[in-house]
Each structure stands twice: as C-alpha cells, then as structure tokens.
Length: 297
Image (tube, rainbow, N blue to C red; front, side, top):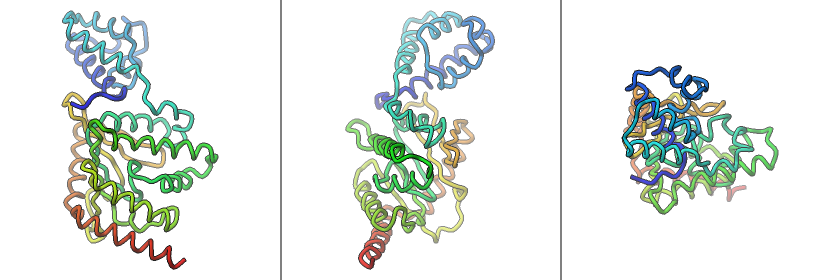
C-alpha cells in the first residue's frame, strides 16, 4: 500500500473506526458529546473524517467505548497523530478560498493520498495536466476580480498540485477522458493552447498517465451533464470519492450508490472514447492546426 502523505486518509480511517466502535457500544453521538463535554457536531465531524483529531479526545472516546485492545488503541492513536498534520497546501490558504470556496483543500487532500484518479472534462484540460500559461488564462477568466498577486499564487498552487503525478514513490495514476472540444478551444490564444497540447502528448509517455479523447462523433453519453473526478484508494478501508465541478466549487459524493453511478458514467465515456493511439493522433492534428494559425498571424 502506498504510504500516507497527507492528513485526509488517516482522518477518514479514524473517523470510520470511531463510528463503528460507537455503534458497536450502542451509543448515540449525543452520549459521546456529553462524555467529552463538546458539541455533537464535533463528534460528527470526527466520524466523517473532517475534523482535526485531538489525542485526548480519541483516548476519551476509546475509553467510553470500552476499547482495551492495546494494538487497536495504538493504531487509532497513530491515525489521530497523522491526522493532525497540515497538508502542503496550507501555505496557500490565503488564496484557496478564491478558487473553490471551502472545497479545494479537500480535493487536494484526496489527490495527495489517492492511488488513482478517473477524470472526465468537458471544457478544460484537467488541472493536473495544465501548463502554467493555460492555468493562468483559466484562472484570470473564471476569477476576473483577482489581483495579479492572487492569480500568481493560484497558478503556483495548481503547479504544486501536479507533483502527485511525478513523485518517485507511487505516483498518482491518472486516467483522463477529454472531450474533443477542449482540443480546439484556444484558451489563452493559439500559442498557449499549442504548448498545452504538447504538454499532454509528453505526459502521456509516462506509464501512470493516460489521456483519451471523446470525439464529437460519440454523440450523447452518460456523462453529458458535466465534468467530474473519481479518486480511488488502494486500501479497501478508504472509500472512493466523486468530485463534481460547479461554479461555486466542488461537491463531494461518498455514498456507494453515488460512486457506482459515476463509475458507470466513466466506463460509458471510456467505451465511447478513442484509443490511446487514435487520441494522440487527434491531439497532434489539433496541435498542427494551432501551429498553422500561429504562422498565419
């Protein structure tokens, strides 16, 4: 199993186990909140993997649940310690709220600890594959009121985010289905798009990155409603998560039914998409069109 690199996975593992132990003890969240002299929302957040765990709270909860197994206690306390760490993205906390209010940190945490990402994009190249110039053009358009400093910071954040693909140990595996329209949409101008297409072609030579194009000829498909990303984890303890994009940030879906529905949608667009070789040929054709437009200007 790949090593845990961020706080998301240990928090989720700890929360799931604390919920199981509480239910096994026949206790309600209100009972535990009374014991810890805290709000029920704090217990709920811990069980959902969204709160920062405190060692004392976890010890008190384990005592309330009657957990005496020393190995189990140490495992949970180890997850609590790992869950207290700050993710690398915290250094960008001053601008993250500008990009995706309250949600970007969750997405970054998931990608940092995930083993595989299945992504479908309708309008843009996925953020994990964007060049600096392409990312800047997207951010300036979507968030036109930002200062030049904030734009620079968000571009740096997006480039830092991409390191999950290039780390030496267990890099994130990315399967990216890209709507053909993205190849022809000159975001940032012909020069920017040409460099972006070159970047995609270069990235697809890496064994952990696959990009396939969904052609116009595919017609209607299950994912026609919009872009989404499924983050998968190696350990069965960690539930897969779907991230659905919107103008107000990402919405995260974790129920089995929701995840399965989006997996089916991803499988459908995968079946409709061109194969890797054909996709590369279409990207090269789009690149040639951009280079021709550059030469004519």
